[in-house]
Length: 194
Length: 194
DNA sequence: GTTTTTGAACTGACCAGTCAGTTCAAAGTA
DNA sequence: TACTTTGAACTGACTGGTCAGTTCAAAAAC
Image 1 (tube, chains in turn purple, red, brown, cyan):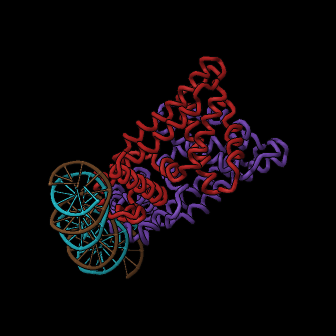
Image 2 (image 1 turned 180 degrees about the vertical axis):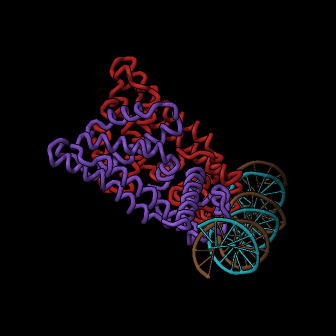
Image 3 (image 1 turned 60 degrees about the horizontal axis):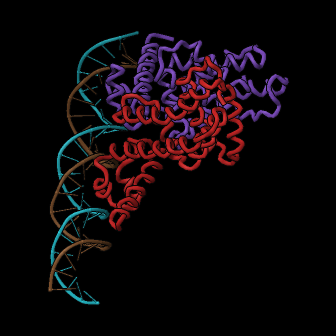
């Protein structure tokens, strides 16, 4: 990667970060391109040099964020037996959300919305992340480590959603609580699966 | 209540319904007052005759919706022993969300946002609803029906958040699943509390 | 020399909020 | 009963402002 590419990558990264924060705070529509450029310390023209439109920027942002999460999930479960793997997923999700809090808030706000232009993209990305969880849970059911009557799809999306709310709630309303503590609560709450 | 009052009440109700649906679908900023008026079959001026501003309409909407939920919560737990009371809360929340799906979606989208003008209002309302849960959980801890080491505040807000995501997820992604089924999953997931 | 960024200027669509005017149920009057 | 008045409720065209998106010449970075 040469200097140019690196610089551009950096600009895009700054735009992602600025956009993610603003959209998490205010929502997509309330966030203006001027706001984003300002917070990223970049000229408005730069936004349009790097992204086709405000919507395109947002969609790429979603892809980027979920991509990272999915990678973390895969890394977390690698080689672990089912029950430990589920616990590892919970841990990975918490750590991810602590690290990318704004992105998680944004997801929480947009994930169950209908009728928005990027809805389809988001549903697909959601599938991608929940897919990893589902594979793990399925393996647990197959190996007999998890109850056979467990509905894998439902349990997986519930697991994902619960992790999301509990973690975001933690960061917004009780940021001082240590992460281990939250992890414990989460695991004891979802005991049937983990 | 005379004809005038009745009529006005009716108009306000229609505005609430229109606004709640549109905001759940698109978010607050993306929803225009013209949209709301159109869907409520009312002139734009009527919106401003009945509410001071778009934001005021939204705030009153939040108050109205959370008020109903809180009432349902109180009615559900009345006279029940702790563990049954917690289960009754879960049931009440599910039923409420099935009945006012759009409102629940809207809550899910807005509850963990920061920096919005109505944020303070929402935090207060949230306290109100979670308060009822907390009272119930506290009673359970006091009576020894629930573990003494349970952090009541945390458990209550987790309970609330989890009910919200799981129910909305159900309505958005698996609407055909029967409510009893969802209730079962929820209760078995939150077994430590319920 | 090429790529990337800058920032200012512009356009056209859109939107919150306003207000002068209309409607009509109910209260008042004879 | 029949007529008149009142004002609450509603209407929708209009205004002032904002914003996404475009363009571009010039500068900066590589």
